[in-house]
Amino acid sequence: MKKLYKYLLNKLPRPILIRLSYLFRLVAPVLYKGEAVSCPVCEKSFSKFLSYGSQVAHRENVLCPYDLTLERHRLMWLYLKNHSNFFTQENLSVLHMAPEQCFIDRFKAQKNLNYLTADLVSPIADLHFDLHQIPLEDQRFDVVFCNHVMEHVQDPIQCMSELFRVMKPGGWAIMQVPQDFSRETTYEDPAIITEADREKHYWQKDHVRLFAKDYPTYLEKVGFETHIFDFHSHYSTEEIKRFRLMKDEVLYIFKKSIA
Image (tube, rainbow, N blue to C red; front, side):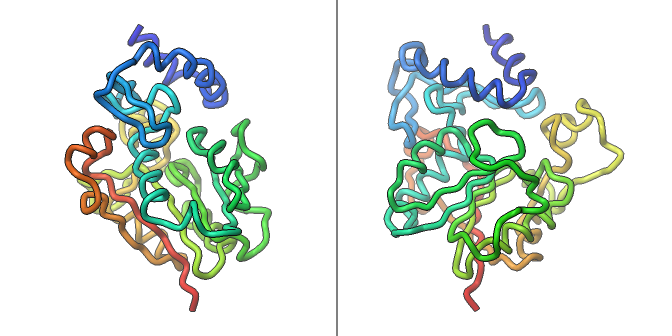
């Protein structure tokens, strides 16, 4: 069963996985009944989380079996709920690129948000377009989410510039990416073109680079200011363990200056 799960996870197209996940969540609470781990998004507890990732970067006990949150989603949720104005400020205009299904229904239900989702192909997104050229007006959004996208695109600087353009002065963004903190500079080689080599070098078959410690400098080149949310200062070791957060993850908050 475990081998079949890993095979389907790595072989099925993303749109099909999204649809199948809605069926799986019906039985997940029964199959994984327990109290060892908790998801702050769905507020359910389980005996364990599912494993997730490619053959090169597979991780155990990280994927919530009900709402499919990973470490990064749970950390982002904790920040939004407990350390931001995302749930309280009225008339926030939000652009959510590549919307995660663990968030999309919850965010759509928020009365304080003007919430728009977009993706190149996702069946759950409102709009479909290429991030290199966003067909939306300047300075429209207060908040932008664009997680685990920049490792896929041809020109990340161009995509970041487009997101900066559509953001209002004073706005902020969360744009998480896989990061190799053992590297000082981002790893990208145009000779790496096969799926097998991309998985070996970039951790996943559809990645075209592996970001390193210098990731924030990409955003800063287009005008964003980098701020770091240190979750270790706000959550205990026990909470970090129970929520299954990634201990060395860095949550960047990128802001667009008013001046």
